[in-house]
Amino acid sequence: MATWKPDPTFYPSARLAADAPKETLAYVASFDPSRQMPDDIAVVDVDPKSKDYGKIVNRVTMPNVGDELHHFGWNACSSCLCPNAPHPHSERRYLVVPGLRSSRIHIIDTKPDGRKPKIVRVLEPDEVASKAGYTRPHTVHCGPAGIYVASLANAQGEAPGGVFLMDHETFDIRGRWEIDRGPQELAYDVWWHLGYDTLVTSEWGLPATFENGLVPEVLLGGQYGHRLHFWDINTRKHKQVIDFGAENQLVFELRPAHNPTMAHGFVNSVISLKDLSASIWTWYREGDQWAVRKVIEIPAEPADADLLPPMLKGFGAVPPLVTDIALSLDDRYLYVSCWGTGDLRQYDVSDPFHPELTGTVRIGGIASRATHAGAGGQPLNGGPQMVEVSRDGKRVYFTNSLYGVIDDQFYPDGVNGWMVKLDAAPNGGLAFEPDFFLQWPSTHRPHQIRLEGGDGSSDSYCYP
Image 1: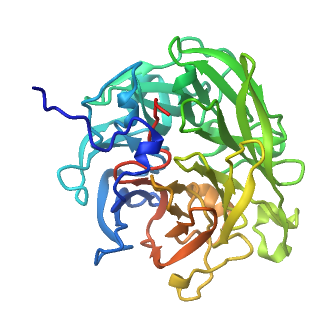
Image 2: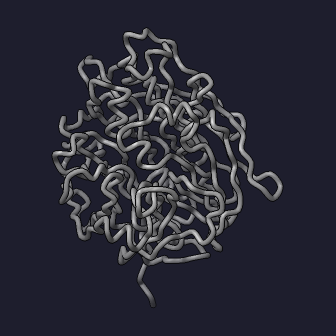
Image 3: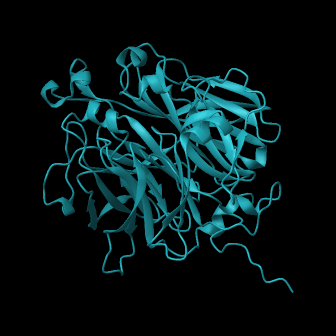
């Protein structure tokens, strides 16, 4: 009788994953904005029963400087149980950690001891460019055919960006994912609706328009990304494009419903050129096509010009700058990071076309500099940025750095890094966990968080 069992962190459905054991560790991308010291993956103890609760217990140091660790992901997840490309005996063991600036990819083994991960392979930039045809790897998602990596530029650092595949066990690069990209040029995030054979991609911009900071002329000219692309995930061909209009700049984070029978998802537009507001949009099926609808608009807040960075002084207002969103596994709550104003918002999206605001907290912010009980009353900068939700939906973690040079455009005194934790009430409402305020080492800034065993944005599920 066979005894080879699937990884216990894999679940057929999000509903079952919500009953998984609580996370005790978080892995956090941590980078040196001066590019003088190596970046690292920080291991944070998130077990309230531990003596090290709320502390960094280890740091996995990269072998080079200047990577700018940004987004990263697991090698395998619950999509390994899907019937269209099953890999039931794969293991959620390795973190796939790209450098957004260097195009170098690090493979980190979290076993046998999750508190002491080790780098086991490094794919150098030349190898990535030659085998994938892409550079600036941004988003890593484990999927039914392997590891999908969305990249912002081609091998020459220009258009088009796109997606390439890696083997989820050997970490060899298989090559470019797209067969026919149609009109797609810009890239950013990638995710999918496995039940509808659909892959979705979003847009940012090319390296020349962000690696030295956002370019005001490009932004005000409406030339950053503002479209969604829909693809056939099996034939790998472009099927549909939806343009949000040039006024809605930076169409970023894709959060499809976790229930595979639900054909909708959410995406944020960082800033409107009309009034500096930010917005959340729902995409959904309309007949045999995809459509979008704006469902949340968050206005800019008037502010004294003396409190504003040079690029905002003329506007006399703080834009919300919604830079990340996260969806709970039960598809009920959407968490929205307002990196400009300092708000982290919780919306009930049970009806995806009529969200209701159910909770909000404020920390940092361009003008407000709101503090935290654990910060001893000191004003804080940066704001809610990368947000992650526990599988049971009861805990929300976030950090405060967006991207090194862009941090400094909006927070000219530099972002002092921190990580915090919120408690989410079952029927809505948010509160800071007062004992969890992690002041980051001053040499580095924290970005994306991954939770031990999986989290709200790590896995795809094929069963309702």
